[in-house]
Length: 158
Image (cartoon, rainbow, N blue to C red; front, side):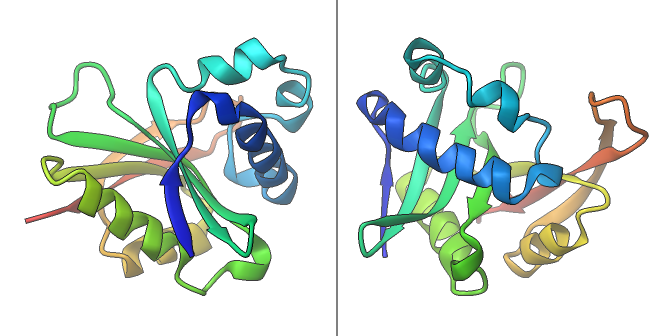
């Protein structure tokens, strides 16, 4: 498996994988497939401005995706992970663990890796806990008009 950061010129690959993720697991995201499928090149390129997109590839097929960004107002030694997705045929095969290890290895100055998980997404919570993420006790309401919330998890490097 190859892990790498996408360049802005690879916006079409990001678009294709992101749309696959939204079709596969719409309940896991606040984003909407019907909205993102209509985005033009400039909008996709803009998604690279404040973040990095990490992909996992096997046999020339993208099987994993994660977005990493620094959140304004948060400590400089932490990063936020979002838009995580693993292709259904590659789940439970170490793709997410490989992405996590890649991030930690390539960003040694980052002490805390944070992410939000929708409260009723038990499989995702279990996966992150197996990877060493722990709940911070923080939660926030979703902005989609439901009564669901997101729970924040942290993975701390030593």
